[in-house]
Length: 461
Ligand SMILES: Cc1cc2nc3c(=O)[nH]c(=O)nc-3n(C[C@H](O)[C@H](O)[C@H](O)COP(=O)(O)OP(=O)(O)OC[C@H]3O[C@@H](n4cnc5c(N)ncnc54)[C@H](O)[C@@H]3O)c2cc1C
Image (cartoon, rainbow, N blue to C red; front, side, top):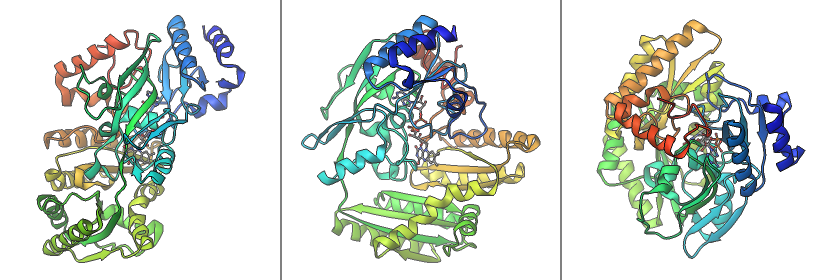
């Protein structure tokens, strides 16, 4: 069965776009997620057109072979792992910007385009596309739309779903649908655009994306506030928002992360601090200066030990170095980095951070916590070694408990990293049996044979 489908794929795409060497298969057997099972696909295909994708889907139906759509493979929920073997469909050759419509503030792009390339292309128009995952220079627009990824600017600007206006999608039966469009208002029928955003390649293959652009902020002010007490940092977050200042970015690094980053980078971070907050306000200059003043006052009132305000772009970059280094620094400590995405209402951040400390103690694990405190999206990062079976058992128990606590605090399983394989087993905790069944009905209505990214989000009942 594998040989005939590969022959058909070569007829369709040419030999160069059908990869079957062991090296190619291994490279497409995993993604950026730690501690996941991996499996070699039967074949990797690299089409150049939507028409070819339609034909690939028809072949998948003929041979009943699963298809795993893949962008850059940077997702953190096991979303691209070809767990049932079959075809990995790489979108990297569909990478064009089809239109920048500065008048309507939209851009239409192919899914394999790297996110940063869109921002570079719209910058001369004074525009920007706000979703900015840490992987903005590697992740694709298609992967980002399919994960509904977020990023550092999420507090003020939201996540990918807030910027996707229209999509073209190849469905599991090979039909092509267009949903949404360029109009600011569009309430016609069910919101199918939103349904496909965050669907992680399980409902259709996105072949074209119309994204909303916004005017780029003219001015920014960045600062770092140092706290010797976690509660004081948490109160500061609450008070900034309570005073109706919505920073573009409001990030927290806990003591484990501060010490690890300092050890790795030697940039003079306060290693005794319980937490640092990194805050950036942006917009019209006069407003930004006023907001920065309010934020500084709130930090002082809440007992910040020190506040550093960047005066130049170089100083701004310096302040962000610590945040950018958080994950690479933590990843240096142990061979395996289990990065989670539990998200709580922002008023519950102190409870969540305390719970994470207790979980670390209870299971005797090192957990570094950093993340988007302003929007309640923390990234507790467990430093471990996948080879150490006994420790991994404790890691799995700790992860279960992290999600249990997040949900108890009124939170959610994912703020921006999606469900994939990694969190599928917890989905019922958040949605209940009935909710999960609704998801399964949607999946089975659109992909009755589970050909599209099987084993991700929702499985067969
Ligand atoms: C160091 C690091 C930092 C990160 N920081 C962030 C962050 O700040 N915020 C954040 O949200 N995420 C972050 N991520 C996660 C990841 O980068 C994002 O989820 C990203 O959007 C994935 O894009 P990708 O092109 O790599 O997609 P892939 O990983 O290739 O695919 C992701 C999912 O999308 C599906 N898919 C891909 N293309 C299509 C398509 N055309 N049609 C249908 N389905 C498709 C795949 O099947 C899969 O389910 C980070 C990851 C790493 C490793």
